[in-house]
Amino acid sequence: MFFSESKGQSIMELSDLGFDRWFEEQAKNLCGPEQRVARITAVDRGRYVVRNEHGEVPAVLTGKFLYTADSSVDFPCVGDWVCAQYHDADTFASIHDVLPRKSFLRRKSPGKNIEFQMIAANIDVAFIVQSCHFDFNLRRLERYLVMVNEGHIEPVLLLTKTDLVSAEALQGMLAQIRGAGITARIVALSNETGEGIEQVRELVLPGKTCCLLGSSGVGKTTLINRLAGKSEAELETGDVSGTGEGRHTTTRRHLVVLDNGGLLIDMPGMRELGILSAGQGLDESFADIRALSLSCQFANCTHSNEPGCAIFHAIEKGELNPEHYQSYLKLKKEAEFNEMSYLDKRKKDKAFGKFINSVKKHKVR
Image 1 (cartoon, rainbow, N blue to C red):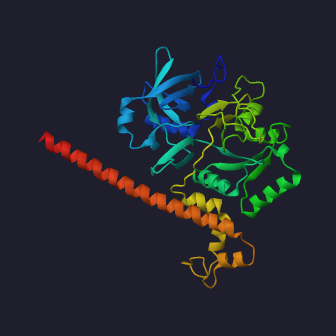
Image 2 (image 1 turned 180 degrees about the vertical axis):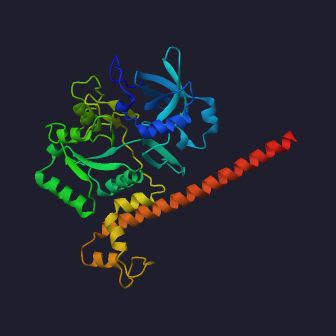
């Protein structure tokens, strides 16, 4: 059953859902005369919910869309704007096209399959959530930052459950983050005491779309309920375990409209954060290493022990954490390997497609 904020949905403007002039221009070129613009608010195993200024209705992809889509990347995800045709007194819709995306969250598909998996689209701010209690992991945080920066989204780091750690432990975590060259805004908060909640609320602006990224049980759903206030948009939360961590309850991605007009996407915790094609995201996430590399004596420096290597000397002098640099190398190698495998797969798919077409033409003759 899909999530809906309230029993009686109030009429709102498309701009309240994040629609602007840029999307309007895209819609003029894509949507037919019988189609209307709507936003994907929920996706669950091939079923969709779309929302326009009048409310939410279930939707399906048209046969033509399914036939012409090159890969799963072309399929709608939460946050997408689509061209939808409404049926049965506007109680049901069919999706004809997806408007171009301003920003996106994607990762390598879980498992051995080398393919992109779209997570969400058209996001302004990504809240990367880590619990101070048993969940803080700097290397995982770097992976999230690469994913967010690659998708042209502003990252904000949320450290939750501050009530379960000492002030000294929290300061140590903050020092680790800044020591890794991460300059993104950080908000420390507690869903129990309410500390930091208002700071987060101020960042969820009307008409702007934010999302929550993080492991299961770090307090994402509880945070949404706190931000929603007395709204009927209360989401189910799990009991707290014996360790003080919440249990995973969110099972699918969905977009929530808050009382203040802000838009928030909740999503399940992700066990795998494979990096695929992340050149710009790596450069932005590891800006300190990128800046050092530009100071090397030789343009083709391998950053090992060459004379004049700025990175090597920074590590020697204790100005650059070697673990931070090793994390960069690992993510860079992973991204390059996956991208090469992906391009090779695409070439084989295209070659196979040409072969099938040639066989069909031969049969026709």
